[in-house]
Structure formats: structure tokens, C-alpha cells
Amino acid sequence: MNDNNGDEDQESGIRGLWRWATKPPQVYVVYLITLILVWALSFLAGTMNPRRTGSPISPPPVSVPQR
Image (cartoon, rainbow, N blue to C red; front, side, top):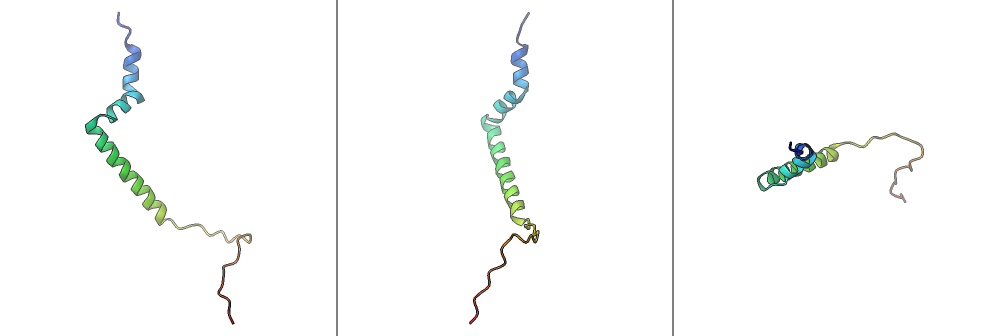
């Protein structure tokens, strides 16, 4: 009777995925995917328009003093 079931369960879970993803061939793909995701999220955040609520608490826009 082998009692290696605990080790096999850990290998197939998150720990096994981490070990697989940190080996040299996969690490380059994981790094590239991470870079693309960060770029896409920052691009998406940069293209969003802020919501204008028009609340009376906000200060009025600054105007140039006139003579």
C-alpha cells in the first residue's frame, strides 16, 4: 500500500500549476502573457472617460482673470 495520494493531489492543484509555470520554457510564455495583460488593462483604463456627476460640491472651473 502506497500512501502517496497527498503528494499527487498537491501536484495536480495550484502548487503543481505553479511548478509547471516556473520551468524555463513555460516561464517565458507566462511572462509574455502577463506583459500583454498589463498593457491591455492600462490601455483600457487610459481610454475610459471619467464620469461627470455635476455635483454642487465640486469647485467651479478656474477662469483667467480679466482686466
